[in-house]
Length: 119
Image (tube, rainbow, N blue to C red; front, side, top):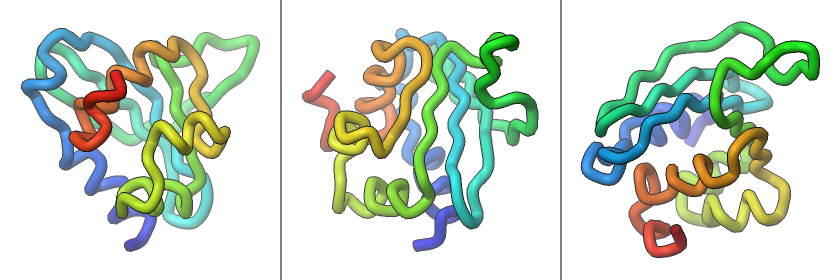
């Protein structure tokens, strides 16, 4: 699966019922070929995703999101195919989280049904 296919598949996995109490903005960045950045706003069971081309993580500027998540495209492919869990990727440092860790953990049941019990 290509990186861009993995990204689209991730956003298509959104489960509105699991996100009814979530109200946060995420900056999701994929590094490598086919990567990019997306701003994802989740509020009241809805999810809006738009491409993002602004600053990523500059100490002089506030992040445009409550939580920033970045991953290499090949690692995202492993996560999306089920060969590695998102939790394992985060704990091993392959998936970087900047901002509130709790907000990142709230994404597990929203996008990854098999990991919903972790939260």
